[in-house]
Length: 167
Image (cartoon, rainbow, N blue to C red; front, side, top):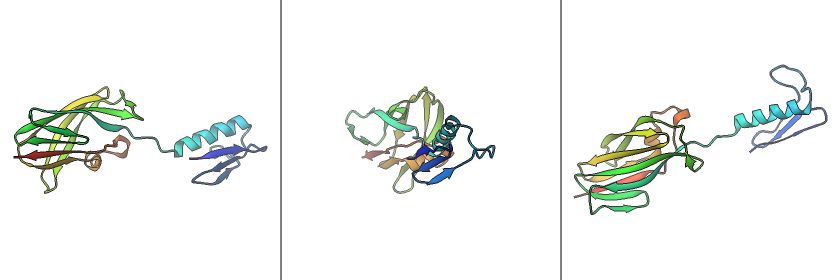
């Protein structure tokens, strides 16, 4: 978090993670003409250095074609040979982010190194994915896995999800 003040000579004094005095407009090399131009520059400077929240992939519903499935927070247990269907949303600061549409491969991995990919389609911030589980094991979907092949500007936060497939 940064704060700033503007002194009588229209110099900007910035406090926070960085302490700085900016006496001139770096773009022109001239002194700031007035307090309003100094204020505008200071607000832009701070905005450029303030981390923006990442959109989040949020699981909104979980179900299975296994009538004995057990759903808990962040996990589901199913019998081998069944599928899990999850409703998902892309949220930004806790609200549906309707500007997000697209398709991506979501890695689903086991502790013993097995891996499969589910195709997730999102339209206007919402989507659904169904994943069949033919082998028993503990499967995980993680934030690191989702983001490993995405550029930083497209990465998502994700709390993770586990699927326990039992025989």
